[in-house]
Image 1: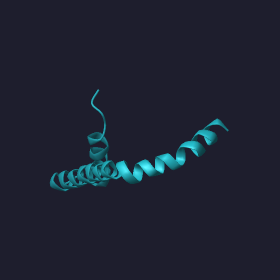
Image 2: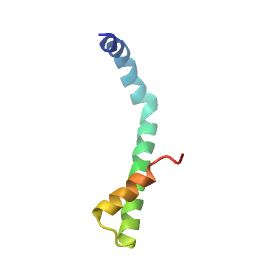
Image 3: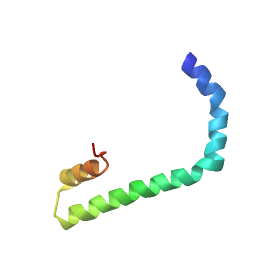
Image 4: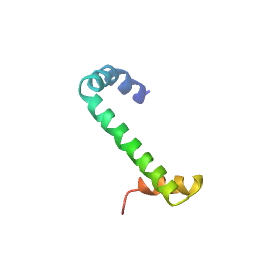
Length: 66
């Protein structure tokens, strides 16, 4: 019930913020994700990796270095 109440009260403000200030961030996020995907596909094809190995390359590329 608490989560519903918070979401119900903040929801309209969140939508307005996304429309006004958040769209450049959303576009940047999509560009970063697609460039990572494209890079993994190109490297996978260049090294003659199969689909699972290329998927692992993509997953490893998005993993944080700890």
